[in-house]
Each structure stands twice: as structure tokens, then as C-alpha cells.
Image (tube, rainbow, N blue to C red):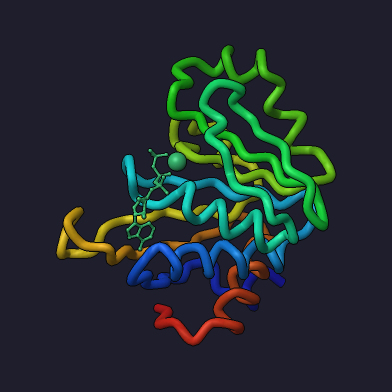
Length: 169
Ligand SMILES: Nc1ncnc2c1ncn2[C@@H]1O[C@H](COP(=O)(O)OP(=O)(O)OP(=O)(O)O)[C@@H](O)[C@H]1O
Ligand SMILES: [Mg+2]
């Protein structure tokens, strides 16, 4: 089954609206239990993308920084849990906030700085990696790589690229 799905795609963003539009599309296609793991340097656009996901699940709220509470909860068509692991340095800290429970909940989890917690990538997930293009940080252009683990998240990528006219590889 998995073999029928591509599990890597690249989408090119020219500005914050493009990045939010991709997030919106993914939020719209998401199902309870989906896990979105985001990586990319400071200012790459992870929160911008998350804002799109939140609107795509039907919430008009603005994403607020989860830096102090670590996980923010929003109510859309389905709940959205937004975590930012930037300041997390030890797995024990994550366990103490009960993050695993969110991964097995009825909502969608979006995690910024997921690479702070490498073992998280063992779970089925959609990975979103945002990079500057060759023009570097002075540019608004971004290359957004989508990869997946597990057939559900591979299908999610396929549903996204089916509905996109963006260039994919
Ligand atoms: N194509 C683009 N996509 C997303 N953001 C862009 C783009 N071009 C410019 N920007 C700007 O880059 C910044 C991205 O900020 P954002 O908070 O989303 O980054 P982040 O990856 O969440 O950073 P942090 O690691 O600090 O949480 C915003 O100021 C946004 O306007
Ligand atoms: Mg952010």
C-alpha cells in the first residue's frame, strides 16, 4: 500500500502567504492523530506554516508562542496541539510535560524544533523542513521539504501534491 505513495515532495514558497497557504491545505486534509514534525532555522517560517495549519483546521485564532507553556491547545474542526521544543534540552523535561499523551490524542500535533527530540521521528509523521533557497536569508523564498513515515502520512503528502500546482520532485 505504502508503495503506491510518494513520500517526499518539495514545495517552493515565495512569501509568507505561500507558506501559510501550504499549511492551510495540510490542516484542511489532516485527520485526528496526525503528527507534523517541523525543522528549520530560526525565522525559517515554522510558526508561519503553523498559522496556516490552524486556519486549515477551521480556527480563526492566531498562533501564540508556546515557548513558556510548551504546548498550546486550539479548537478547530479537530483539536490542534502546537509545541515548540526550542528550549527543551532533555528528554526528561518532555516526559514531565506529558507530550506523549498529545501524540496519542484525538487531535493534530504540530511540533516546532522537533529535531530537539530525535526519538520523536520514530513515530509515524509528516516531516516539514523549511530552508532558505540559494539566495540565502535575505530572500523571502523558501524550499519546503515534505517527507513522511507511515502510509497515512504518505497519503497526506500525496493529497497535498494532488491539490497543488506547485513544482514537486
Ligand atoms: N516564504 C516565507 N515563508 C515564511 N515566512 C517568511 C517567508 N518569507 C519571509 N518570511 C518571514 O520570516 C519570518 C518567519 O518567522 P516564523 O516565526 O514563522 O519562523 P520560525 O521558523 O517559527 O522561527 P523560530 O525558530 O524562531 O520559531 C516571518 O517574519 C515571515 O514574515
Ligand atoms: Mg516559531
